[in-house]
Image 1 (cartoon, rainbow, N blue to C red):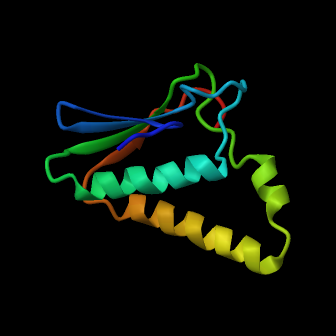
Image 2 (image 1 turned 120 degrees about the vertical axis):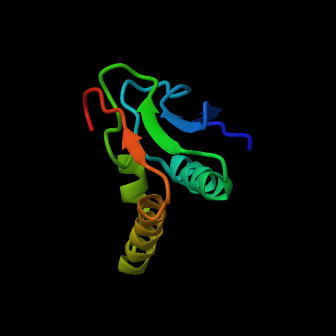
Length: 111
């Protein structure tokens, strides 16, 4: 796994997925690239047989995630594109919900 946007680390049987380490903006948002990496990270978590838990966190103090980047929303030109994007996002969040290990988010600030 070679993540460019997220950080992914396993320590003491916990998987840590971090947002915003490489983000130049003051607010971390979900871009298309972030969502793609999240899907890959979740697949890696699903495949990990030794993990006892998953922790989401932000590398930026005072902001966890500010939502979907406006450019992503603006790029959706048709209702079909919007529905496809929503289905993909829901599938990713459902995959997180379906994990067999406890999952927590360390929220500090905007979320």
